[in-house]
Length: 194
Image (cartoon, rainbow, N blue to C red; front, side, top):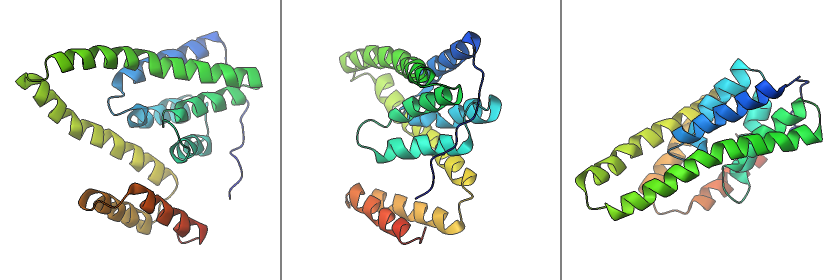
């Protein structure tokens, strides 16, 4: 098991916290496939542009939230936690969780609730059906961009790409439960094969 990502020392002022909050508000309005679909933009903003997170902290936040039971949006809370810890205190870490989670949840929740009510009332309209079918490729492309960032930052070997493609095909073409693939991946990782 690898060590926890090291924290950095940041000096964040109120304009930085407002910038973080505003960015996550905007990301919320883009998160059509869930917050995970905007993680490539989170990476650009948090790791590349502002250097508020290290690559290891970014990867650990997504990995831990995906492995843990519950909603996968928890990776946003972990990113806020790490930004706050990097700013120097437990209080800042808790504030980071609040800033990122309220930012990512508020607009998307309001939009989803409103759109779902309208869509349900108008579900027979051709335009509503077309919109639903047209959004599927967009969501898939956003998820693929997330996979690309996670794999390329970790220096993924070709065998990992092959394993990802094979897993995707198994999920798509069979009725095998996803937990079996997760268990197989855990065993391969435990034996150091991936």
